[in-house]
Length: 454
View (cartoon, rainbow, N blue to C red):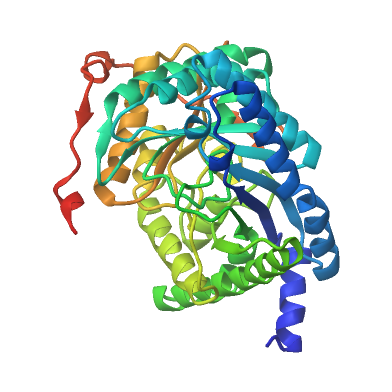
């Protein structure tokens, strides 16, 4: 039970410290929409999404009003489209029709984004998988709410380097297809290793095949709350610091748990998981970078950054698991560049580089996220960046991801505006030396030895 002090404290977090529920995401299985007729598949997909999610936005708004908790986004994730359309879609163009249907359904029910235009190819690619991947540039160019993800590796299977090479090409083609929008399509495309089945955050959300017919997943966020709490612990030792982070993460997660259970009850859909990630926004005071600087860094990227981030990530998880029995998704600290004003400032001042960001991904929630790079970066270099990040996830048995944006027509020193929660980003330099011979070898990098535990 909450006492009056805790109610006042939570209200203060919401009003002054930017505590919010970042997203309520309804996962919907589309496996029963499979059909050999493309028209029938599209009709089944549209009807099922609208049937299940027709009240998602209105219920989210009602809960926000009734409980006084901001709920920023309402989203949908669906079964990976490569599985759903595999029987009917014989070409990339056929898959694009599925993207149009997903986009139309998302508009109809009023959600911000719909995720699941995805393929899972960690060990090999079917013809359907390859057709979907090759359709991604066109699909993201002609839709506004569809998000795409591809899982190219896992600790159990190793890295599918054929898929890595193809994704390097796909990211670059997506950038070209959306060049009139500063290559914005790449902001809706994520390449994973060890992708989770229950992630509520875009652009990587999809509804895993092990999930129920429909579920409610909630992502909470409160970097501003953590920063304010740490301001009260200045000069204290690490024991006090860790306790402060844990207690704050517990309170943040309890808010998410309350919203998730209420959304589940009102929508008649089972509760899935709480993702207790610290997800920043471009707003001042809503920054993971500022938390790290409050811990004691002059600027993010300084020596000690990786250690500070590792501690933050671990304490957030320790506090969160005490507040909810079902913590899942990505859960930890996100370090997107364009969505975090502190990260942007650190890059602009030269404190933070792509290489340091990669080191930080060894201990954070996901990976290289929302990073603008020069538009003339080669597909092989992008594939190499993907391979490096996927290898970190494979070896360390964690989820890693790459969401880089080669902005066509922009170079190092330029700035690109994405707008809204996506923010803006300085274009970062990439290593000028080639890895083309490496990524063109083909085949699969074997799984590490600890993958054979049973």
